[in-house]
Length: 280
Image (cartoon, rainbow, N blue to C red; front, top):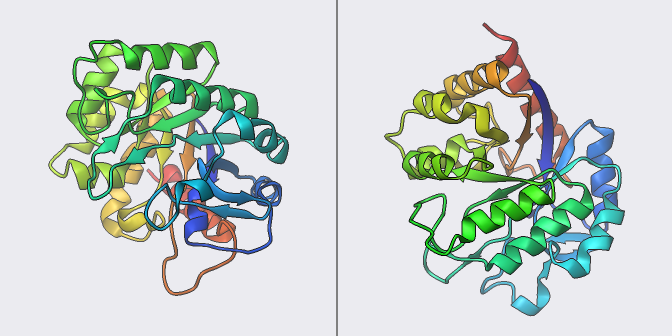
């Protein structure tokens, strides 16, 4: 298996460094041998300032959705030569964990932006109003199939986040071209009784992305309870996968808040996973 490790612009919520551009952040990752997961919400690109999502603390008018067509050229120019994947935008109604779903047109737009930037995958929480990481319905209008078909024509993989085994199983059974983003911490949170080895047996050949963090978005290696899951995942993928993007989405381990994307912490997490990968 070819593994590529990625920092994430999501991390900028926790590791802030003023007066540095998106291009400089991308160059810093590339120089360290890392790719970059692009987070879709920003307050500005130069200097780069992250926005978590639209909400009470950030009025919609102040948030740039950088997967929109209007930012396509700027993002592509800033990250030229940097290997990238995307996290899909998503919307939530205030006070609830349930998604407010993107339209097919919004999905098509971010797929086209990912293709223009040269990104090969987008991690998604939902595909229309009837197919999500939490539950998969009948999708009577074929919205999810339309989105996946559009991505396939743009040569972009849709990586469906595996939050619940039943939902992941149903989505994979229905959509042959759908790929999977395995997320051990989200699975532990949303489906705590699920068998992680059984899920791997079912979807390992679909996995193109891993969201690599532990509970509370801490770096891999923080909690010994995750050690067996990381080892099982790495060894299973080595058996069946051609190429997988490991995306590190995490915040500070303690009170220290290093600058930028915490490249040093990302490299330590990478080395931890590589040590498990090499262990018997």
